[in-house]
Image (cartoon, rainbow, N blue to C red):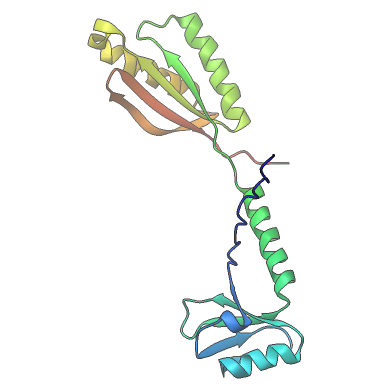
Length: 184
């Protein structure tokens, strides 16, 4: 005999805003369209919302008294979601590209990596260039800082140095960010 399958428990979705009877304050500041703004007793504010066939939504619970808006709650929630989605879409994602050097990097390798860094900066990505000191090469710290300074000078017209070369353990690092690009 097969056992009946159990359903997973339903998750209770907590509403981000208090609505109508869930508002606990005694008096509230009422705002909204077709409403005379002011401070009202909670019962009067709820009656005003019911008279218009709308909901009383607490939009600013930390204010004294709390601010409530008389709106259609489902429409209000939809607009809030839409705003959040738009904010998320407009947020820029920072991309960091790394370029690795050795303290004895040859000129040809340096130029090759410089061209890559120029392309990265043109695309709008940040560049993290570092010199990796292996074994006893740590003795040549000055070569590393000269190399990174030369690298930063080669990228002056495409990006700016965020932080001067800094030695952390066996790595000397410099960060470059793209210069502001004017869009046409």
